Image 1 (cartoon, helix red, strand yellow):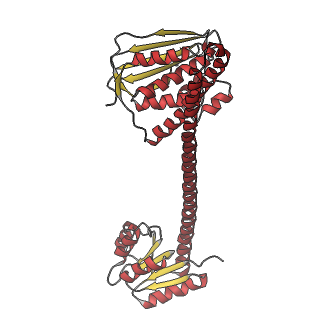
Image 2 (image 1 turned 45 degrees about the vertical axis):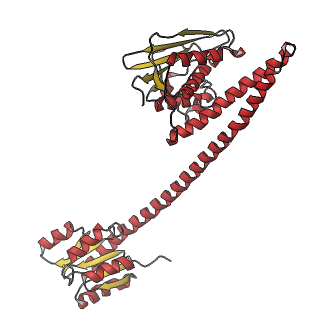
Image 3 (image 1 turned 90 degrees about the vertical axis):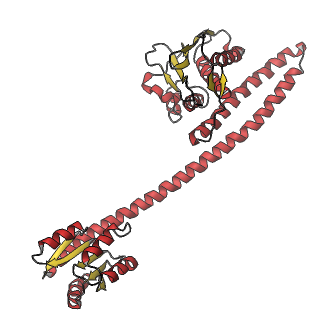
Length: 378
C-alpha cells in the first residue's frame, strides 16, 4: 500500500488551517499542522513532510525565514513549499520566490486551485524521491563493485607476490645444479640452462605485475642513483645475446657518445630494457633485425628499439602500452610481448618523469622511443 503524502500546513490562524485541511482531507493526505515558524521547522525535521503550505505572517519567525531555512538545509531543500500570500501583494510574492518557494497561492483561494497546485508539486516531489532512491541504489552498487574490484586486485597482487619466492628457489637450485656439471654432462646442462632462462622470463613477468600494481597505487618508490644510461642498455643487450633462441637474429647497436650520468633506478631501468628488447627480438623472424640506438638532446637522453618485424597497426597508437587493450591487440594476431611487459615499461618511464611512445612516422616494424629528462627526479 502506497504511503499517504504528508502535508504540513503552517498558519497562525486556526480557521485558515482548518479550512485548508478540510479541502485536502478527501485526497487521502496525512495532515500535519503548525501555528508558528519555530514549530514549523521542528516538524519539518521530525515529520519529513512531502509538501508545505506556508503562510507569510507567522509569530516567532515569519514565512520567509522559515522558507529560507528549509531551502538552505541539504536534507530538506527539495521539499516543495507553497507560500500563502494576500491577493494583490506582489512584493511578497516576489520575495517568496527569492526565498526559494516553489509556488504561491493568494487568499482567498479556490479549493480546486489549491488542490491542483498541491497535486502538481507532490507529483514532482515523488519523481525526485524516486530518482534519489535510484541514485542511492546505483551508488551502493557502485561502491560494492569498487570493493570487489579492490579485493580482486589485492588477491591478484598477493598471489603474484607469493609466486616470486618459489621462482627464486627454482633459479637458485638450477644455478647450483649447473655449477656441479662437468663437460660430460653438456647435453643435460643445455636443458638446465633452458629451464633457467624460462624461469628468468617468468620472474620478469611476475616482477612486472608487482611493480605495475605498486606504481598505479602510488606505493612504489624509486631508488634513484647516478648511473650510466649506455651501460644499462649494453648490459641488457649482452644478457639477451646469450639466449639460443635469439641466435641468428641481427642486433645492431649504436650508443651515443658523451651521454651524462643521470639519476635513475638502475634495477627498474634494466628490466625496462629487458622487456623492450625481448619484445623486439621475439617479434622478428629467425634471421630478423633489431636496431638499438641511444641519443642525447639538449634536455633529454633516450633510446629507441626498432624491430623490423610484424608492425602493430598505428591505429592502436600508444594503446600498445595500455594493459586493458592488450587482449584486443593479441586477438588480432599482433605481439605485445609476454605478460604486461610494455605496460610496465610505460609506467616505469613515467615514474622517472619520462615518456615512452611508438614512432608513428615509422614504416617498417615497430620503433619504440624512450625519453628521459636530463633534470630527472631528485
